[in-house]
Image (cartoon, rainbow, N blue to C red; front, side, top):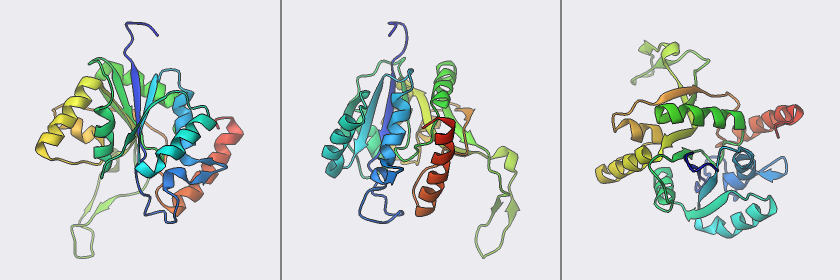
Length: 239
């Protein structure tokens, strides 16, 4: 690795309970074509030459299992396994606190249950982040979107061309992400993603086109769709 190149860290929050998907197995460890979902996700980062290290946030009960999984599937880029927090934001912060970061380094945050992220999209996202300091994958909605403020009736049709469905990975210069998390902690502010935290610093986030395959598996229906996506990816040699 060139001394002049910023180091690339990937943080994978995987400490969720998976209550929406049901069952006794946490959603990140549910099998998808013979492998836990989290393995499919991690292998995409393992195969991406731009990523240097991967750090996981996990439930305490899953630490030992994840160590065995990392060894079995040769996930050599995993450098840290950190105890997750109450919320996703807490989990990512716990990992950030354990990383040794230079200001010019780049941190990617990606959901552990988004296994269908192409390595080429990770690479492209990093390229954009190096230029703009903050970049996020997103896709535009296909359906008409209407707003209702209550009462059981629609009151506005939204302009679909101005709307984006936010995905992960999300990539940021380390100095920005650390500062954003420090401010959020001070303000006791929570959001559902890192982009919102960084925007609170007055930073504009560069949009990078994502993929409709890059689904987050949180329900039984998502798992069924994931099986279909897997079959198509497998036929193309992507998995």
